[in-house]
Amino acid sequence: MAMLDLNAVACKIDKCNADNETALYWACEKKLANVATLLLRCDGARDTLAAISSTGYTPLILACKRGLDDVVMAFLDLDAVACSIDARNDDNETALHWACMKKLKAVALRLLKCDGAQDTLSVVDKEGDTPLLVACERGLGDVAMAMLDLDAVACCIDTRNVSSQTALYWACKKKLKDVALRLLSCEGVDTLSVIDNEGATPLLVACERGLGDVAMAMLDLDAVACCIDTRNVRNQTALYCARRS
Image 1 (cartoon, rainbow, N blue to C red):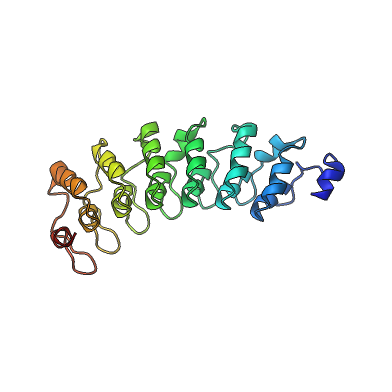
Image 2 (cartoon, one colour):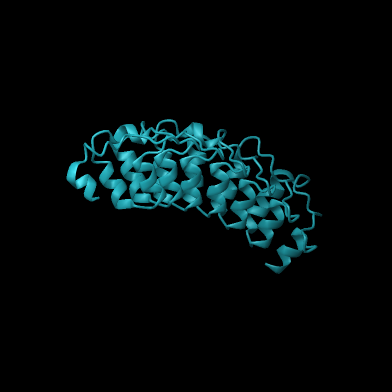
């Protein structure tokens, strides 16, 4: 801070090290929100927003990963285009992935309004998660609905992560009734028969969580695909869970 106060120009904030990391990168990495905000007021700040490190991190992705919501908003206010919201790190994670993972609802909704947002909806990270899947897993119903409103096809609702869980599975698990019903209304929905690593289908989870309307919608859509005789690792069926709930 003292260096910037003394002579911000001499600090050359747009300079990168051998790994293409800037001062702004490290301010975000170390969660120095005040420093990051001050750097944005300096000449050359826009150039640093576009810098991508050797591991694929932009300042935007890193700020989302560190949960610096105010800093992220400041980045987007300064120059959303320079932020490169469609950039991916080496784990194929975008800023939208991390905004959802850190439950930065306002940030995620803001990112969805930026140019290029549709291109980020179909990105699958190393764990097999799309932004929609993460939003459902984190219980961000408003964000999930905004994604589907933007481009339901690009959301790739039938994507399964490494645990064989889908957006529909997590919408049921987190009791996101409206999201689950919306997913079931999407064209080409093909997730009813997906069984996760613990033996649960979306129907079984819906029954377990007491989502009667969602379970009925699943059965109305395709009772055969629901695989009603499936048992989870606790040897429970959808019927068992429905009776208990």
